[in-house]
Amino acid sequence: MKGVVFAGDRRIEFMEFHDPKPGPDEVVLEIKASGMCGSDLKFYRPPAGTMQKALGLGDGNIVIGGHEPCGVIVAVGSGVSEKRARSGQRVMVHHYTGCGVCPHCSTGWQQLCVDGVEAVYGVTGHGAHAPYMKCPANTLVTLPDELSFETGAAISCGTGTAWGALERLALRGDETIAIFGQGPVGLSATQLASAMGARVIALDVGPERLQRAKEFGADVLINPAETNDVVAAIKEFTHGLGVHASLDCSSSPSARLQAVQAVRTWGKACFVGEGGEVTLDVSKDLLRRQVTLIGSWTFSTNGQGECARFVADRKIDIDGLFTHRWKLTDAEEAYRLFDTQTSGKGVFLS
Ligand SMILES: [Zn+2]
Ligand SMILES: [Zn+2]
Image (tube, rainbow, N blue to C red; front, side, top):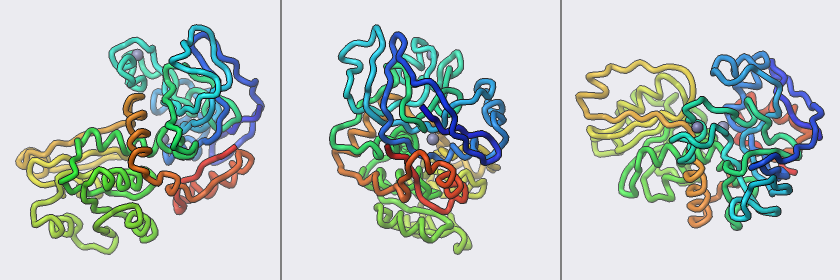
């Protein structure tokens, strides 16, 4: 089969791979939808393997890209019970594998494995930008019948990451949350938080993204590029107190600072955008206001399943996140456009 590889320096290569066969405790999926996630650009843009090395992930071996896998099981290896996986089952993949038995792996957080994550699919292990993908059966999450494959792909990273962050914040329906950055993760957070009953203040420097946030449930829109004092603007909408919770999906140092400053005393701020830095006045911004600052990295297998269930039960339009649907053979054009970060989310469908 042909798989899409990030060959470095913004090059895409279609490389020939053996059709995967399941070993013990493994399954093979036929990929029906493979999402494009913002973090793929970290591997698409630099010379091949450099980001993997910088993150301490493997030795930069050539792998098939794509870490939002969703499809149908077509082959089951030995030792996999019928209850765990069966041929024809519609599934998502929790896109990491660890040792499988340490305290983190055994609670569904294989990315936190005490031995270090063994593979991140699409980064150090073969991902979903191919017709087939092999993975351990214990990384599968059932896709509810009501959900499309593309929704399953989004939940496998971007939307699931938004869910994981809202869970960390323990957001309640009577609270107001400010969500900085309305890319695919921030927009998902807006949808989910709104469906949870919370009031959402959405922030982005892009007017189109703000408009989409409104369509997806945001109550208040703020464009930081057109606002003198973002924190004051947020306080204005919250009776001078600030929001109960904030979420930074932008990775921007100024947005991160505002996300901390915009929460009320006893409030909670969560960073989910990757990379970069932030400078805080620790006493003034954090401790003298009893602020809780949370870092959140994706989600567990259980969290992924709960997110899917929530999306199905509340009929949340995750398909609406996708602005571009591609064939795998369009991968070069798809990533060239995605690299401009002006479009919404893309997905490869088979
Ligand atoms: Zn482990
Ligand atoms: Zn991702």
